Amino acid sequence: MLTLSAAAVHRLLPIRECIEVMADSFRALARDRVVQPLRTTLRVPDGSGALFLMPAWVGEPAALGVKILTVYPDNPSLGLEALQGVVLFFEPEKGTPLAAIDAAAVTGIRTAAVSALATRLLAREDAADLAIVGSGVQARTHLESMLAVRRIRRVRAWSRDRARLERFCSEMTERHGTLVEPAGSAQAAVEGADVVCTVTASPEPVLLGEWLRPGAHVNAVGAHTPTTRELDTTAVLRARLFVDRREAALAEAGEILIPIAEAAIGEDHIAGQLGDVLIGKAVGRRTPDEITVFKSLGLAIEDVAAALYLYRRAGGKA
Image (tube, rainbow, N blue to C red):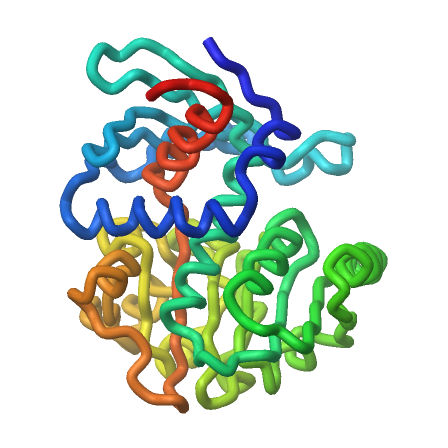
């Protein structure tokens, strides 16, 4: 069985190529060629972490796999990664295991690639001012992915850890040749931005709707439980809301479920799924001044599609 480390994943799955892989997977999802249950979550009783199980099958091209991921938020203080796990990839006709792939690396790349796909579909064509709220792995991959789909001229970033933020801005400026400025607050980063990516572990809103300029697009990525959210209710109310998968969003997305519980919105506030926009079943941005939000939860099909691509790139024949 093939084993692919994080280093191998980063070498074989560039962001730009992953964006197209994700586009194909979302088209398959929109055309009902995917089977994927909602993710199964097991929370450790002492509250230290959780295990997530995410299986999927896709019919075109045929692929079968599962991501098993653990999230232990305090691990970095012990010198360990907060996200650890494996994507297992199987031969879809006989069920033979073909590959075990580093899940944290796949997650970092494919999540940013999906946000880039949403930005390509929903952001203004002339979007040039980017805000990133967060300074971890997803902040790094999201910066790269945004640069792949829009001509970004200005980047502002903010996170609560100032030393980590300064390091992120310095390293990303050097790597990409685009100045990444540390902002003094989340508001200072977001105000005036054409595209905003929230990629934090915060359980409470880090972005207020009143900060958003007309025409802004937001990728809300960090929160993934019914009781946590990065965007406040005003942000959701002001925007046309798009999701990766409606069923998952109505089961797991605090950005949607909390405003529903407040009677601020109904389920019909969801304007469409990303795949439906791709194939023309849903309308994306309608006007230059419209605010759009893409709520990303992460889907198993993203991991399985990435695994198929990686297996083939590594020399497999599936």
